[in-house]
Image (cartoon, rainbow over all chains, first blue to last red):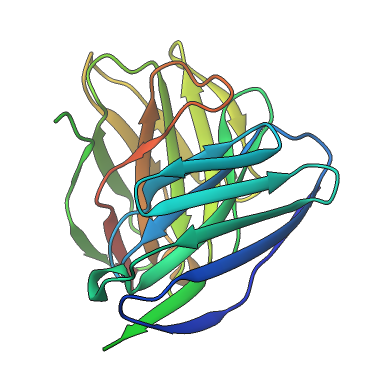
Length: 110
Length: 115
């Protein structure tokens, strides 16, 4: 089976940097995704890691360590619109299904 | 930019009634998915669909649920006899090939309320 752990809530200041951690256990690893979800809306894709290391995409970076079952999402130059839930998601199986974590609700304050 | 669309955006139904939720995936995508999210809970996988058949389903996807691709564009989720606990947001998603690392694009969701 799979298990995903991430903090429930985080608060950060506009313009700052925040790191959202995720640890996971899985029997079959098909990559780790980060999705963003604003309240009442659909998840939107942010990043994907399948190999160890850092993937950078603008203000967002994601890191993976497969041996430690650990990932983080780094958000730089925080903006008010970054207030959302950030979902750590495992790719699983041969059909591309996604296994979602509970999500970390990030509140960005002025 | 192509997007996944879903109708209706909201559906209210009585317990025991049948509902059909509709999705139009991105046109050149081959893999289709349904997920649900009960209010305040995590997104849960229901079913994946490829080549006109179910490729994988979760324990949630019991005999009350069915999926269909009735034509070249629509992808539907039917709940035969709704229960109170089926109240949730239902998301449709699609991807190009379903392969490892392929991004899934989610529709805006249908909020289902069962009374």
